[in-house]
Amino acid sequence: MNLVTSTILVVTIFCIVITKVAGQSETTTAAAVTKEKTNVKESALCKKCICNLDTSLLDCSEKLGQWLSAEEWEILTNGDYEFKTIKLEHNNLTSVAILPKYSVENLYLAYNQIADIADAAFQNLTELSTLDLSHNKLTAKALRPDVFKGRYSENAFEALKNMKSLNLGNNEIHSLDADLFEHIPYLEELILCSNTFQVIDKLTETAISGLTSLKTLDISYLEIEDLPTTVLHGPRDLDDLIASGNLFRQLPEALKYAKNLERLVLDENPIASLEGDNVFPPMTSLRYLRMSYMPYLFKIGTGALSELQNLTELILSDNKVLNEIDELALSKNVTGGRYLDYPPLEHVYLKNCNLTTLPTPLLVRWDKLKTLDLRFNPWSCDTSNDHLINILIQQINKTNPLLANDVLCATPSELKDVTVLRVSNEHLAAGSSGSLIWVGLLVVLLIAIPTILGAYVMKRRGCFGLFNRNENGASRALYNRTSFNEDFHI
Ligand SMILES: *[C@@H]1O[C@H](CO)[C@@H](O)[C@H](O)[C@H]1NC(C)=O
Ligand SMILES: *[C@@H]1O[C@H](CO)[C@@H](O)[C@H](O)[C@H]1NC(C)=O
Ligand SMILES: *[C@@H]1O[C@H](CO)[C@@H](O)[C@H](O)[C@H]1NC(C)=O
Ligand SMILES: *[C@@H]1O[C@H](CO)[C@@H](O)[C@H](O)[C@H]1NC(C)=O
Ligand SMILES: *[C@@H]1O[C@H](CO)[C@@H](O)[C@H](O)[C@H]1NC(C)=O
Ligand SMILES: *[C@@H]1O[C@H](CO)[C@@H](O)[C@H](O)[C@H]1NC(C)=O
Image (cartoon, rainbow, N blue to C red; front, side):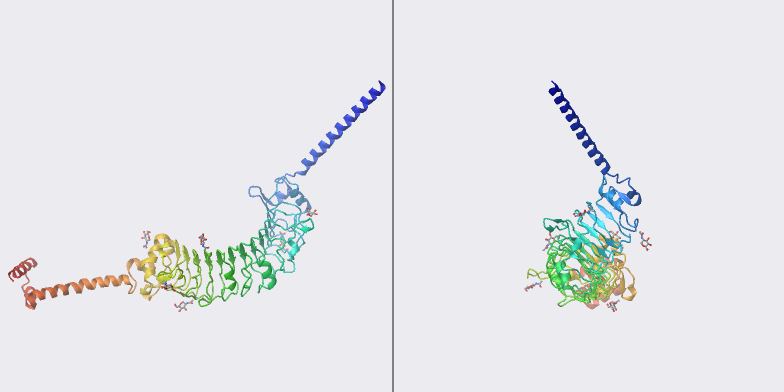
């Protein structure tokens, strides 16, 4: 009896304790959960910076003057919302330390004074896809491969495998470490513009040619005179190459390896002419070519663009001294047949150059063009430019009237600053075949017909008859009747 009671008592107490402990642990977990989630939208951070939950943007540009504080990071890492894009531009940041774990995808650190980045600084940002470090003070020395090191796991460092876009433009870089991209091997976009490379050395070449997933490469304004021949050998899928504002005097030979390139920009390079050996190599995928603001480009010679047989958009505007485009600049004898092949151009821009005439055979189907911008050139309005005056300008007015406005004649002097369209409509062109036809017709009407008639009459009636008719001054009907009668009598 006593034993039973005490057993029940013990069991009861035990149960109570168990329940109590369980309940307690339940309440602690619940408390921890509610404490963890910070309301991001109402947080101090979102009062300081711009928080846009619709676009998932946290914009602290010009708002901090330093890095986010530990408390501010706490708001983010323990928040009820995670931003995909964080902007910290114009904040006088001088270095990047190892950043806390956060699922940001786009991180903008441009326009700071960053000169130093810690090893594995981005290891905890495993979702990071776009990193903008442009307009900082990064040097070749600061850009060690370990900067981009991922997490350490199973005896090795993981790659930052989501990193697709890296902007290092406008820094103080003159060379890249050969292994710089070893931890970010899947880069699809690399921007190096406006750094004083002066030459793409062997190490830089190795770094770039290792990026086999690269689709866009911007190497504008690097002060380079050439590209190493094989630099584009690795990035086989490169679609876009932007190489404006360099010191190329010739087309880089490296282009012949850019087999799959679709868009190429070579603005502002000191190439003077495209002819002879200095013409584009076969680039059959190229659809867009821009060579504008070329200060010395005066001639586009025979075959210069002939190997670009898939070109749909050609932009050669603002080449102030461009004076000559050879009529065989675009065509290619592909089939060996009777007709040449031409690229399927849809948009051609030749604005603001020094062109005077446009050769008809340059392009076989001008009517397929959707855009033809010929404005601000010193056009000749004479026979040498028939095609432009009689056909092209009318077509431009039909398809894109705005582009017809500033197509003006420069010569001959009496047509200076008259629109080519007016010259076309009013047949003003000096000696153009349009007026030649009219002159020819007039000649026929005024000279040939009376002469033939006269000759006929003379043959029938002799000089006297003709003389006789004029002298008599008889009415035409009467004359005709007599003439008929006379003829009848003969
Ligand atoms: C960065 O430094 C400059 C010069 O010291 C200062 O004028 C500017 O306000 C600073 N920027 C921020 C966001 O604090
Ligand atoms: C970043 O990741 C490292 C290793 O993965 C870890 O040791 C560190 O605590 C993390 N830092 C923060 C602030 O989350
Ligand atoms: C030419 O361009 C078209 C698309 O405009 C593309 O489908 C085709 O594959 C290109 N040809 C070559 C040889 O790259
Ligand atoms: C434009 O071409 C003409 C020859 O057609 C040449 O005389 C003139 O100097 C050129 N102008 C410029 C700016 O190169
Ligand atoms: C193309 O080349 C072939 C052989 O080289 C030649 O017979 C043919 O006339 C050329 N076609 C044109 C349009 O020049
Ligand atoms: C340009 O074309 C439009 C119609 O396409 C026509 O009405 C107009 O008169 C043309 N302008 C000139 C100056 O020929």
